[in-house]
Length: 117
Length: 112
Image (cartoon, rainbow over all chains, first blue to last red; front, side, top):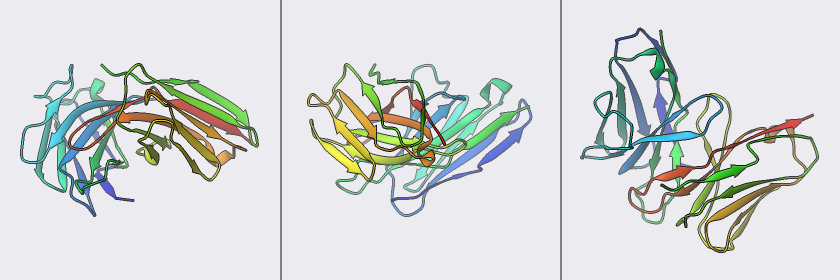
C-alpha cells in the first residue's frame, strides 16, 4: 500500500508556542490531504481538508487561525498549531488520497502525539 | 451531517470465538472502508467495499456492505489476540476531495 509519513511522532511544547506537523506522501501524489484529531478512546474527528495549491476547508468549530494548514506541493501538507494551550494536547493524524485514477482509499500517517505543558 | 454508528462500542471475548461488528448510518455512501488502529498509531486500511451487497473476505475477516449502501458489518472468525485493536468504519471518500466520515469505533479485546 501507499506510504504516508508524519513527523514528528510526538512533541512536547510549552503553552503559547507554535508547533508544526508535517505529512508527506512518500510514493504517490496527493491532491487532497486530511487532518484529524483523536481524543483518547475516541474515533477520529476531521479537522480540515487540505487541497494542493488552495486554501484548506475547515470543519465547523475548527479555528482556522489556530490550526494553520499549508499544502504547498503534491506530497506535503503541514499543520501548525499556533499559540498552543494544554487543551490542544491530542493525537493528530493526517491522511492522503492517491490522485491516480481509480484509487479511492485514503492512507494514514502514523500520527503525532502533541502534549502542551 | 452524515453519522456512522458502530456497535458494540466495546467488545471483549475469548480467543477462538467469533464476533460481528456493525456500522450503521441513515445516509448512503459511495464506498465504505474498514480500518484497524493500534494505540499510538494511525489507522491501517483493511478493506474497501463499493457495491451494495458486496462481500469481501480477508483471511478470517468477512466484510459486507448493505444492499442500500447505508450499513456494513465485519465478522471475525476464530478471533486471535492479534485481532485486538480499535476497529473503525468510514464512509465516503470517493473521487476528488470527498471526505471520509468515521464511525464511532469498536474497541475489541481478545483474551488469551
